[in-house]
View 1 (tube, rainbow, N blue to C red):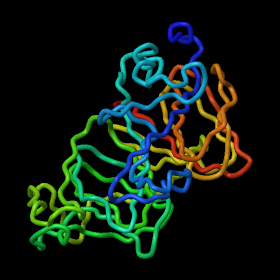
View 2 (tube, helix red, strand yellow; view 1 turned 90 degrees about the vertical axis):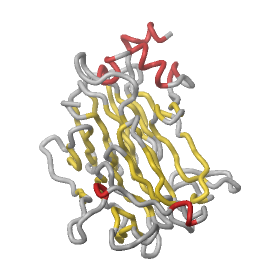
View 3 (cartoon, helix red, strand yellow; view 1 turned 180 degrees about the horizontal axis):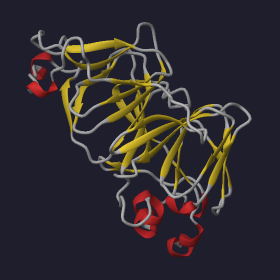
View 4 (cartoon, rainbow, N blue to C red; view 1 turned 30 degrees about the horizontal axis):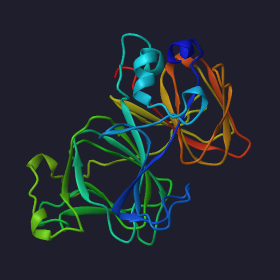
Length: 301
């Protein structure tokens, strides 16, 4: 079946994968109805990492894991020949905290965060205060509001305060270390980080990202050495094809119009749609002020 479809590449909507976490909430996110007994902390929208694999939700490939499709379609799915190859290079997920903060972690690769919902005096943790002897006192906190965008560089301690929903994206296959977890005994987490993780008191290496206008109607948020993030906020968007991307609507409604096997695809909140590099040109149309984030590997990745 995959071989027959190779000449009819189409946008692939992916099935969300929900993971229960002790810091999560019973309401999974603003986009989902969940089992009232389940405590959802992470919802993976696009992933081939940590033993998890996204499944296709639409078309004749429905139910098939993304890595099988990648192996069959190869670089037609991800990028033109000579650039990035499989496995899926980016991971996109939602994270939601309950009445306790999420763990304090440090990761070996950069991450993009978009704050979706907040609670009273919501904060994110970014870096550490070397003057404090132990966690969680070492964690530096920043008050946040919905709609803010951040870039966390590799090696920066990070955490989410209570009552947050954050859409995150980062490179697949990165290292992760937990520095502190509020649900475990404190003496287990008396972790002293390497000097490279410390940040100057008045110069936090946390980038706050603001959209900048683009002639194509895309609003660049991040154009890093490994991946890019763009924001869509207008009612009509036109794209030239040629590069793999993942689109995640976060408000409003819209449709993806393409030359693929399914030329008119509804974009759903809380789901990711993978637009293959081999799809060609495509357009996003919205009559209800669709807001979405578009993730793609950098051209030089």
